[in-house]
Image 1 (tube, rainbow, N blue to C red):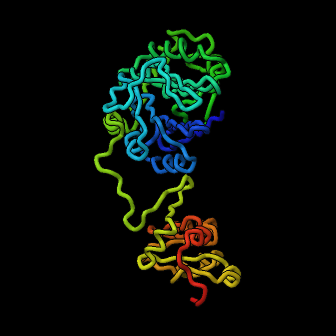
Image 2: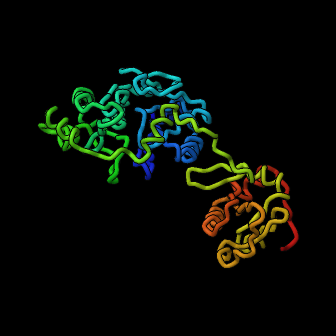
Image 3: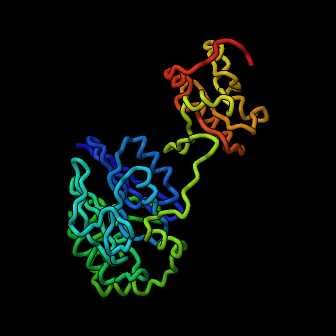
Length: 356
């Protein structure tokens, strides 16, 4: 049995999102998704063929808005958190020692309050890893000076639950701001400057109670939004000029079928080389041929009054054309998924004669 695992990062908030799935059943879970990263996460879920079962909030966040509600809207996953998080409309209310099944794997819920009353961690025994949210961080821990946090409670959550796990258990935190991605329970038990080594409760609470940190920048908007699972006041508006799909690489793609049915509404830009078009003269009706190596010098020939669909043999090199146009100010531009190979495979019409 194999576990599919991805650690994702939001630079603005310093938030880690985690995606796990059983490769056999494709059942998956996402932990702490970020609103602004919805397209990225959906693209990865789609490309890896994951059937998202759960979206888990380790607590009600104060530094970013969750994408939980939108993910449920797109995937029919179940949103899960604790009752103590006070998040409204949960599909699954979690308690300490509950299990979340992912095919051959099971994630154990550990109640780890302190940063907030509703905080949880998720523990996977094999392979040994624990997702600690804002409870235990790499050489640090969550703050306890807002949302009715408790330094004493956090101390006991870490020492009596997390530090009881095996030394080799990998720690995946909810945040990091210094480029670190993981630690281990053994490392943090020995080396964490706030709670490791011979630190006692008085040392720990004395440290946290005197931090005097400013509130998170998004506190006033994030907490109310997250209490409603991140449900937006208005739904995000999809592009009206084409039914685009955003890939994990950040590329806007359209299907060959849609382009074939919309040739009177779009401009197809074919970036194959002249040698290619001489050897294989098949081309899409009305397509403009500008070889990729000439595109930067011929941008003035590409219209701006129609959506531009980039094309090559396989849909790979035309991604560069998409990128060039986007960087030069074209907003309505997308790559034709699979290129001419996909066009032929779908039996879509093309021309075999005629020049520009």
